[in-house]
Amino acid sequence: MTDAPSSLWLKSSYSGGGGSCVEWAPARATATGIVPVRDSKVPRGPVLTVRTHAFASFVTGIKSGEFGTV
Image 1 (cartoon, rainbow, N blue to C red):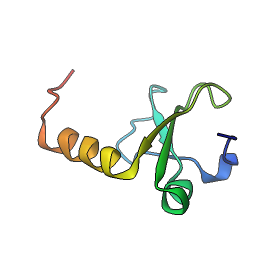
Image 2: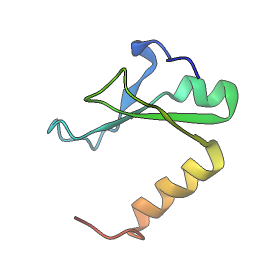
Image 3: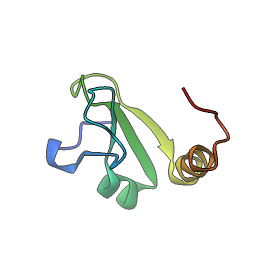
Image 4: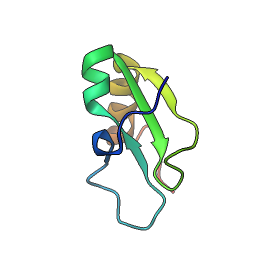
């Protein structure tokens, strides 16, 4: 996958600005059905890609506390 332009990457509104954030590219997800996710500290690093339904399930699990807290 080629890297989406930086302007297309968004951080979660829950990111506290501490630097340990992930970013995702919602426009790419809408266009392709694949959600690209990357480490905000390494924008030219590897990109994890997951299908939109799997990403939605993951977010739902996080919101419900399924994965616990740190």
